[in-house]
Image 1 (cartoon, rainbow, N blue to C red):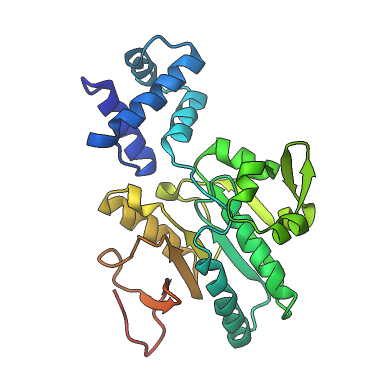
Image 2 (image 1 turned 90 degrees about the horizontal axis):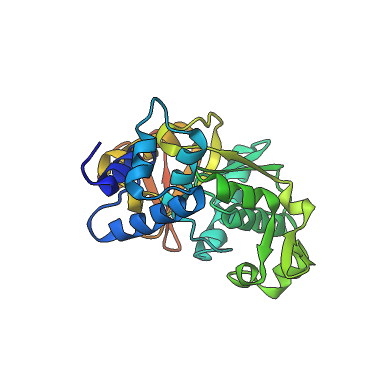
Length: 276
């Protein structure tokens, strides 16, 4: 074990998730570890580190560490232009390929707002033009976030962030001080645990959202995540990264197409110019 327990836990988190804690953000890790200690009745971070050195750290404790290590900041229709452009992309794809089902993966879904925003977008699109059935997979490494996503219950503050009053009334019902997603839209999403560093998702998708994940990782981990996404991409599909993320320098055999400032990363098509 590292002489510094913070370094020890930083190494564990990086190995398991690719997320980097070093230098200026180590204080965040310290506060999160102290929170685990309080909740678990552990006297100090040093003692917590000793518990992780056993023959096999307790799985529940390990998952709590990973849950606290991840940044679950999200909101409905985050960067709205993404949801405007996926409509035109999928319409063109359906017209060109005549696919029997649209498959979409929200690969770092947090508490579910992104997947629900996708579902609402496509529901609205289907009212204007017939679409094939849509299936949405929402995965995350944080079990605590996944539990909230599966529950489909959001606070007043959460539904006010990114949701118009029209969408709130159409897709949610009021329950006390909270808002519950209507079954008609929530049931379109399948939720599951997945670690993108060792991805266990084997389906193929026409659209993969993986936003604001790469910014927390080193180059080799970024490449690992991109390869995991790329393997699951349909030949005619596309990957969407966060506004401040890129595949430049990370993946050579990839095409890019910009739609209203949003970059779509696709597998090279025969005869098309490759972009890296």
